Length: 118
Image 1 (tube, rainbow, N blue to C red):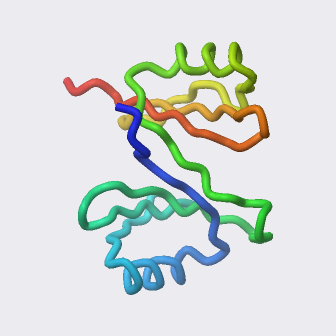
Image 2 (image 1 turned 90 degrees about the horizontal axis):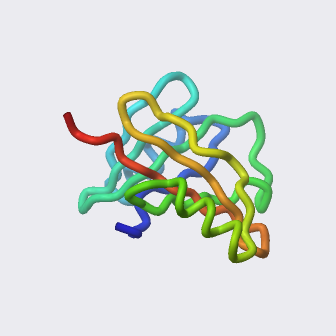
Image 3 (image 1 turned 30 degrees about the vertical axis):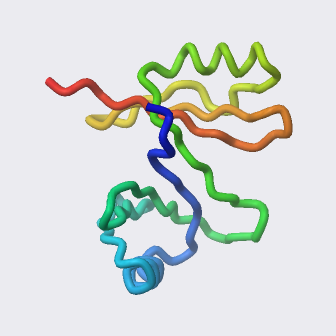
């Protein structure tokens, strides 16, 4: 638990991002719908590139997601120690749940909870 589990950032042309990151880092990637490109590193870990109309440096910083056993206690704890909830717990069908909080400086920190295995 608590490892950096997933990272996401934006791209204007996902079809260009796939060969760039694959060629640079040997990441494997697969489309996830029309607006996302999921990638994974050979040694584990990965993330998502999200399609956007425009990327302005500094306006679309990467967001990292920390793997937690249960999201709600972390959202409450973050509020108690000076953070805020930016995006409440939301389901990713067949995958799990995510939420985003901000630290006292406003930096986004994502939380990810796996869906239990059946």
